[in-house]
Amino acid sequence: MIIGAPAEIIEGERRVALTPASAAALAKLGYSCVVQSGAGTGAGITDEAYRAAGVEVLADAAAVWERADVIAKVRPPEPSEVEHARKDQILISFLYPAQNGELLENLRARGVTSLAMDMVPRISRAQKMDALSSMANIAGYRAVIEAGNNFGRFFTGQVTAAGKVPPAKVLVIGAGVAGLAAIGTSTSLGAITFAFDVRPEVAEQIESMGAEFVFLDFEDASQDGAATGGYAAPSSPEFREKQLEKFRELAPEMDIVITTALIPGRDAPVLWTKDMVAAMKPGSVIVDLAAERGGNCELTVADQKVVSENGVTIVGYTDFPSRMATQASTLYGNNIRHMLDDLTPEKNGVPVVNMEDDVIRGATVTHGGEITWPPPPPKVQAIAKAAPKKAAVESAEEKAARELAELRESGRRQTILLAAGAVLTLLVGSVAP
Image 1 (spheres, one colour):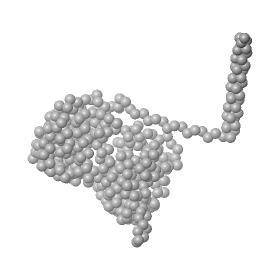
Image 2 (cartoon, helix red, strand yellow; image 1 turned 135 degrees about the vertical axis):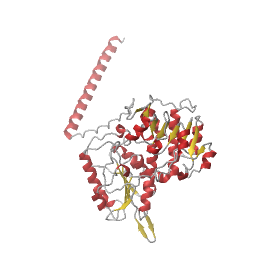
Image 3 (spheres, one colour; image 1 turned 90 degrees about the horizontal axis):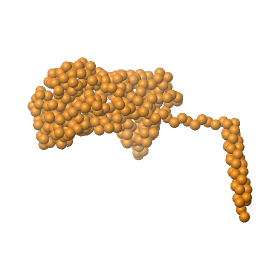
Image 4 (cartoon, rainbow, N blue to C red; image 1 turned 90 degrees about the vertical axis):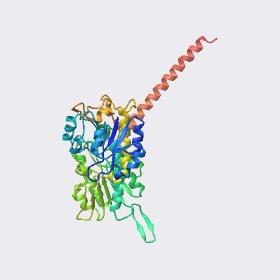
């Protein structure tokens, strides 16, 4: 069968779903590949590079949709693209089914089998095709680079003949894939990095990367991230108040704030309010990676960079992976390849949509003329271990009582042993000559 990659038509989208390297790997699975002319230009991939990898280059998107049995895309298809789709064609792309009900209905009506790369279950076996994590990793890295581009000082501290330069202070909110990438990049550039997450169990991981975890003075049985597919769970109102109180305390000290907090199926929680922005120093920078879902910062404007009244730059770009299109296309192309590897059990170029497979079932949103989203719960769910209970503090009276009981028990055992020894001696004496 044939896999096709049309050019992305969303303005500013530079990624491509098929690279020469991924096409060569797909050929080993028995597939032929076609691509629209110019599809890889934004990612620095020429038509000649595709041809050298054995990919046929077609003149336009209509030709790709007509020839291909499997369509690989980055962005969800626009209505004009869906018109090219046909029955039993397979579409693999980011689809965001919770926000695109009309798109799902159109794909269902056309008999298309659709696999959403954003719905791949976050389990160990599926990590190789976890495109959300691939793109989040790039976004976290790029967020720090973008912050540095808008920040007027060094990240690292320096002592020079001209004077001493203090290191920048960076706060990363959210320690998922994007947050961890931002933490790693920030610390590697020499900034003093702080990080916060509602899951205290990630503190050790954050500290191992050279950052300081921001703890809250709040006793609450937080839900493990595994319970919501690797994301943080919603917090209680009391926890949120403590959270905002801590952020208000940190705001005047921070030079750069990078927010990454998202909750599945909801708008992004507002964690950095207007008064926190007002408390920051002029020249500070906020990079909001949740801008596409409303933003974690109250003043974020999606797809724009704005400056507050007190001189704080707020970056709300929603295309960070596309700003690193070459790297993003390489990783996304690999994710697509691994998905097709799982879809091709016989390695004969014939995809099989096995709805008994948890990964394939989780990603499939339309199939057989039906909308199959949301998927049923996985057959096997990871159950987070409960945190070990802290040992109770022993009072002086309790300690004395315990030691007395241990002493009595020790004396009782010694008495029993002496009695047993005496009996044994008498028995030996009675039979001795």
